Structure formats: C-alpha cells, structure tokens
Image (cartoon, rainbow, N blue to C red; front, side, top):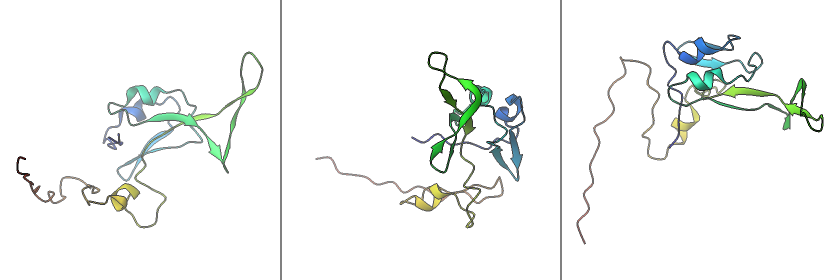
Length: 129
C-alpha cells in the first residue's frame, strides 16, 4: 500500500525542519532538496510516514557531501536529502502521475471541501461454490 503525503495544511514536517527546507506553496508541501541537510527531523515529525531520506543523484551519479567521510577508509559519503510526493509539480498536465496511471480510475486529486463526493461504490457479489 503506498504511503502518500497528505499535504497537511499546518504541516508538522515544515515546523520540524531546522533549515526551513520544507514550505507550502498553493496547498502543496514542497521540500527544497538544495536546502535540506538530511537531518531526518521531518521524517520523525510526519504523522503519516510519507517522508524518506535518500542519497541525492545528479545525472545518474550519487553526489557526495563535502567534508563528510567514512571513518575507517576516509571515502566520501553520499549527500542525503528528504523526499516525498510533490503531486508531480514539474509536470505540465496538472494531474499527478499516480492519478493518470490508475487503471481503475479510483484515484483523484482532491482540492478541498468544495470537491464533489466520489461516486458510490458498486458492490460485486460472487456466488458460493
């Protein structure tokens, strides 16, 4: 089961971030990867478990953290940053990829209380064999 960001109105993760790398823009909670220091405070603060901290990649290669090395062999350690669902903010069509890819069309992007309620569910009964 996917764990997705609920884009909280008063996001606890944003309040927990010591460098203000998490902000809310137009109802979407965004993480600025460049400002994130990978401290995991947001991971601990998120009540839904929707944030993860992982290595940062550029052009298919792991970026290393300047000044951070492995204690035993002095090799550079990867730079880490928090990431989570951003509702596919960089796409042009306005719909998240999960909504478009859902084969049964059960996912939808809710924009608040004014949204119309979803269609009633149809129940399917199977005879006993």
